[in-house]
Each structure stands twice: as structure tokens, then as C-alpha cells.
Amino acid sequence: MTTKFLNEDNYIHATKEITSWGAHWEARTKVITCFVTAFGLIALNTSWLLFLSFNLLLLTVLTMGFSFKFIVSKLALLLPFLTLMSIPLVFGGGFPPTFERYQFALLLILKALSVSLIMMIMILSQPLQQLLSALSHMHLPPFVVSIFFLSYRYTFLLWENLKKIQRALLSRLFRSSLHKNSFKTYGEVVGGMLIKSIDRSEKVHRAMISRGFTGRIPASNPQPMTKLDLIKASSFIGMIIVLHIIEKW
Amino acid sequence: MHLSDGVLNLPMAVTTSVAAGAVLTYSIKNIKEEEIPKISLMTATFFTCSLISVPIGPSSVHPLLGGLLGIMLGRRSPIAIFIGLLLQAMIFQHGGLTTLGINTLLVSIPALASYRIFTRFKTDNKSPAILAGFTGGFAVFTCVLLLVLVLFITDSYYHQGFFSVVNILAISYLPLIFIEALITAFTITFIQRVRPNILETTS
Image (cartoon, rainbow over all chains, first blue to last red; front, side):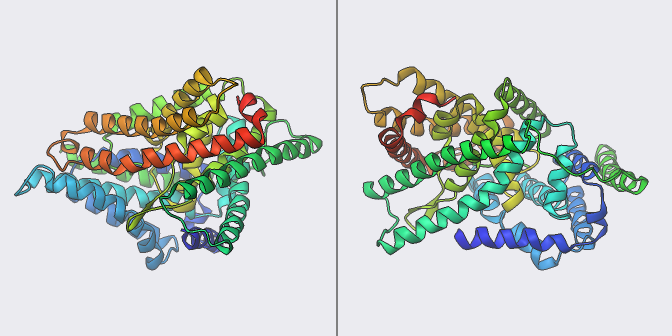
């Protein structure tokens, strides 16, 4: 898990270099479009239409500059969950499984994979700071945006702390197991981190107050919305509407 | 615990998103500016601690810490859970967009219930270990119960047959109930021993 977490961090920073049409798409329009498209997709119930939309989204993500290997690595993260859901869905009703059960599992897989590609467009097609800045200009409660900014920042610092604690435990021959002492150690590690965080939060608050904090984290001005952004948004939403019309036909 | 996109149908996804919005509104109500650093740091801490893996046979599980979150953050816990889920989506692309609402509710409702239970039954002259352990286990149990309920309502394919999704999920989460109970009990005991005032002033 440790390596995985750090690798994911590298992936996030790697995407900052992308200068594709996806990166230039104004983030607020992109976030709203992605949510609408995702809800539209899960309302589809025809496997070939979902297969078509998955391929269209895959093509879209590829044109945004993501490598095929990267996309596969992201979609592969869904595999354990999809396997856990699909096997009982297909075989749960007994043998031989019915066609409807296969179809239901297939729909679930296609929906999950397609929306995962939408998430990739929404989250990874621009530097994360640009997305966070856009969120702060979307009329969300300023407290929530401030908490999100700070939590994101401190997650990486605390993860470094946890790794140090893990190394210290390993040097004392700690072995993770289901023994009571092992849980005591986990409990004390979590308790220690919580106490440290509360202490730190008081210092952070004083530091923020001294810099004029009033509950809102200042963010740069939002990127202006252009006609091109609206065309991009309309293309996505238009695609979903067309797919629904075909399904109803 | 995160349900992926596609598990819920559109009416369920919309209903749960609206309900999660209502829970978040309740959680944000009357929030003070001085609470922001504390909630932020606690969110980051819970998110980080939930990445600790506990080995079970050939596999491993990650604690949810819903009960502990409820005890520590009280009515503010849904904010931490919602932001934790957003962080998971941003860092690992786990969870989903259409299931963000249900995933928030699945952990928030048990966390709020845990907070009520802990504050209602906590006494000054007794060790809080048993109560904290119960609260930790109760939070996971309630979370699984809600998950089963949602899948029951969503589609009959999820609960038909002995090897149904519902049965397999319920069995696979059983060990986590005991793991969470123990971790919560030891964490609260540690905090009570080192800094008892934290438990008195939580939310």
C-alpha cells in the first residue's frame, strides 16, 4: 500500500505536464459536465450503447494525452471490486446462470469503467491545483472548500509521519498480525496521530488567524469560460442525450 | 467502503445524493471558523490512518474508523467523511461520482449514531474501552446493514440466491467489525490516558 500511495502521488504530478484540449477546458464547466454525463450514463440500460459510450470515452481520454498504459493501470484498480460484484451476480442465482444475470453484470462493469474514465477526465486532465481553485469558485460553502484544501495538504504530510512510525515499529521488530498486542499498537499509533493533529490544528489556527484568515482560503481568479468550453460541454451532454434517444427508440 | 458507479440505478443515485446533501448541510450548520483547522487535520489523519492495512489470512483489510470519527468529530464527522471520499477519488480514483452520496451516507450515519451512543453512555469514573469498542464495532455493523438495505432496494439480483452479493458482502465484513472494535477501544483508551480533556471537548 505504501508504494502504491506514493506511485499515485507521482501520477498526479505527472499529469501537470499535460497541455491537451482537456487541460485547457475550463475546470468548472468540466466538473459539471462530468457529473451530468456520469448520471446520464448510469441511466442507460443497453449493453451495446454502454459499450459504444465506453469506447467513445476511451478515445476522448486518449486524445487528452493520457497514455494507454496509464489508462489501463487506472481501470485495473476497479478489477477487484468488479470481480467481487460480478461473480455473485452471475452465479448467485444457481447453475446454469441465466442470460439476464450475465447482462446485468456486463451493464455494471461497463457503467463502472465508463464513469471511471469520466473521473479521469474530471480529476486528472489538469493540474490538481487548477481543479481545487475551480471548486472554490463554484458557490460551494467556503468552509467546505477550505477544509478540503487543508486536508489535501496535510494528508501527504501525515502520510510521511505514518511512514516514519512504521519504520520505527519495524526497527523494533513489530509484525502486523491479528494478536491483541498488534491491535494495541495500531490503536496507540492512531491515538498518537490524533493527539498530534489536535495540537497541530491549534498552532495552524493561530498561524492562519495571524495571516488574516476568515474562513475562506484565497484562490486565484477562475479561468474565464469561453465558447470553446461550452462546445466541449455540449458535445458530452449531447452524446448522452443521443444515446438515450437511441435507447428509447 | 465505496460502492462503484453502476451499482445504483438512477433513482437511487439521485435520492442518496440529495440525502447526503441534507446530512452535509446539517453537519456544516453553525460551523465556526476556528473549527476549520481541527476538522481539516482530523480528516487528513483519519484518511491516512484508514490506509493502515491489517492482515487477514492471505488478504488484508483497511479500517473504516467510522465509530472513532464519530466520537472525535461528532456532528462534524460527515464533512470529514465526504472530504475523505473526495480525496480517495482524487488520489486513487476509488469510489465513484454517482455513488459519492451513498458512500457518504454509509459511513456518516453510523458515525453520527456512534457519537450519540458514546456521549450518552460515557461516564467519568469508568474506563471508556468497552463503550468505545462497542461503538467502533457498531459503526461497521450499521454500515454493512445500510449497504445491504440499499442493495436490497436497488435490484433483486443483489440478494437472490445463497451466494448473492448481499450475503458475500455481509460475511466479508464480519472480521472488520471485531478489528474496528479493538482499534477503537485501544485508541480511545490511549487518548483517555494521555489527554483525557480531548474526549471531554469533542464537538
